[in-house]
Length: 307
Image (cartoon, rainbow, N blue to C red; front, side):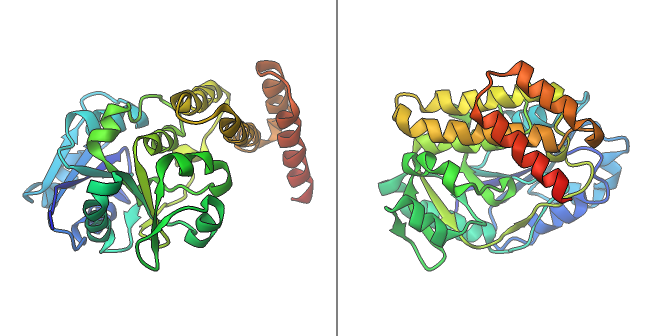
């Protein structure tokens, strides 16, 4: 059995209260061949001083950006210019691993199935029984995990609707070849994870291995009208990447589901909740009006009344 290098990149900005817990959770992994890269995006404190206890470790690398790149560009810069592992995981600086066998279990399976099935991503934290029922065809690895053709999984994304960035381990070479983190949007991670499915197979597991910390500073919770068009661009990127590999009739349900999700999120996550009427007007006047918009608006209004 090979033990290839795995890189855990930890992009961070002003996460002083969380970053050490994130690093410690990687250091606690049972898999030994791990490279840790913390890429600090100009935090307002001395990151070198704050992480001095980690800097001396052999497998630890700290990158202090001289200028603020922004969340997605920091992801991309770290991956393309610093990651050396055959596989990599992106662990945001405010999240952490909760399963010490996370990397070891995933790498062992990825290596075992590489020759015959070419897996390009291993995703944890899934309802495996639900996925079995949806996709129909799969290979059982053990009681917790299955392997699925990536295109088959892609075609059913709108039904599966499960993804946690920190719970995914990607094949680095493939990720770089398809332009991971190429669009500066809130769902750039999901965009990338969708497109890599078209390059090989996926392994999914029911184990929960990472904790996504929810707080008021999460980028994922700050969608506004300025970001709307970036999200639309990400959706187009996902759909365009599948053309020629997935039949148009199979792409349409996914495209509808992604657009509906964006319309609803734009309504519900507006910076000033009292201005949701402005959000409705924004969507109607900046998009081709169809049933999905009215469906999203109706659901949003019903939820407002229930609250």
